[in-house]
Length: 83
Image 1: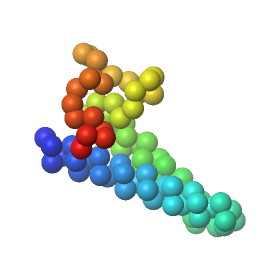
Image 2: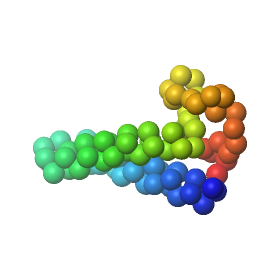
Image 3: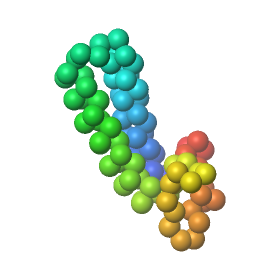
């Protein structure tokens, strides 16, 4: 499970990194249509992967930002930052 958990988490981190980089690029190149299309595609992919991740491994964040299965999943280890 740990290997799959790590691979799934690393995929989310890679997508998030790419999204942030494109966000910064678009701040200085707002008329780059291809970059905006890439950004939107990656955001959709991130949301889809995040949904799959939380269904499989539990919530990524607490305080009302993620659904939980029964029983309450947030207290289950490992937490995202414990990997």
